Length: 148
Image (tube, rainbow, N blue to C red; front, top):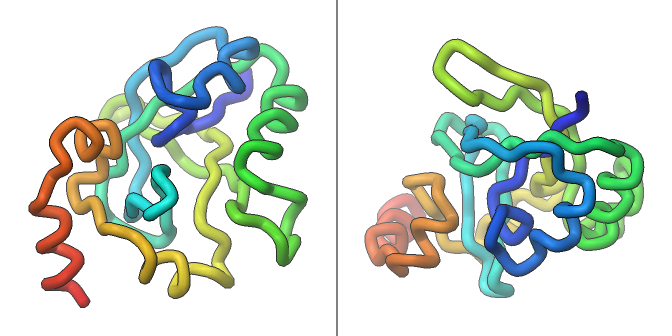
């Protein structure tokens, strides 16, 4: 079965969950290795490479093609290496437990836009966008300043 890893507005209970919900078979907590920023537009962006644990949800979908088409529209993904992409889509290892991983699609910062997009965001060193929204975690602001 196909999987999509989500870490922001597509997670269950978030603003755009309704875009993916028609295709959802199951959802479970999971993580990837990377770096996470909260952008000033109100959503996060995942960056590779990175060694942080970035928390999200592994979504099993029943119709991969239709699910990806719907999410592609939301994420301004127009195809591999398209210069107009806001996000890239790639397959990565997603961990559901320390010893268990699945391959899943995930939307990330395009490789050619990392520096520009990273400079706009607030680094979430804890890797958890929902936690950031709940707490407005000021520690992440200090992390950004200290790592500049």
